[in-house]
Image (cartoon, rainbow, N blue to C red; front, side, top):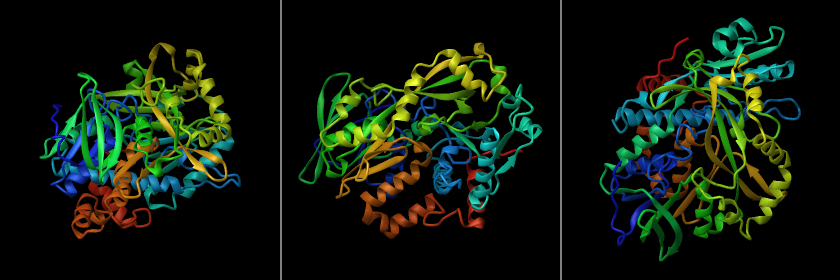
Length: 501
């Protein structure tokens, strides 16, 4: 991917910081809605999508809430809450519609390069967990988005669904699973790079690599974005009418540098990750599903254990994990000083309060860091009883930064979702947080545009175009069975998804 620069003497309409899935999504949306916009993209690394958007770094692909049990928590009274799962499933359908539009309009190449059909399953054992999964299944059946989910406690049926998971398991053990054949595996790294290539080919769009944004300052109604070239050391200033900070874990320090009131009080808690990667082709070939279990007490959402079939660089891969850890870096390629340098007078109280309220998480991360290879294999064998150590090797995953925000009652709380922080005048916005992230990027960016491009979003021109890109725009699939079926049929065809029993 080549690089070209805009003329820094003239203000651009939009500056996107970070060449990941969020910036790519926002850039393509804006350029489709307003083709005359001038856009400048800055990336601190030498390639696009090398941090959290990369397939090896992404803790979960194709998050649609079909199998992720942390999106359906069991409350103290025993009820299973499904609101978050429904919202995420709805958002993922929005993403699929947008990607279908990109494919149909040849804005990205063949869909097989970034999305594949793969069953999504939840798997539990023990009477208490089986009762929870059964209750979750029954509750989700009330929503149209989950009507095609199937449930079984029959070991023979489960052995057909996921043979490696059932092989060598105690036949007396009570087990259960749900399955959604509509599940997908998405390579967000490949998708991001295709979107950015298309975006960069359009008039008045420029992308520069090895460019680190050092300062952000608003002056005379424009943002002065000060950038350093990491190769040459040269510095320049680009003026912009609107700035989006989509730098993953690097977004918090840049938000702090913007000095907008809305960004005060936010902190970040970094969580690192590792995978066990299967290196035995026979084992890889024998498993074809994303199988999610229940997280350990105190574990962050990114650490929900799963045995995950993926397509990476055209090859089938099998991962287990992720195993969480702690690093003071906010990015995989970041600095050990990221966390200490992010602590400011306005966020130190929320960060301390959140830390005291989340001591189980701290203990969990310490325990994870201290794990031996044998400990990691023990965790794998809960899902793959016949696993052998020689078939697996450790792979470093990406960094996530969980959001810490001010809270009147607690002083500060740790958020496990994503947070859009925007200036009151809509001239700058940042995305903080991690999960579910990439899978809901389209919905997140639409929310951002409603806050930062309010007049344009309400215009007839943009409304018409949005409905072309996202046919269900302004409607809800979760309570409209006919619309849900129609949309899913359209996206399944457009994305060439091969759903088989």
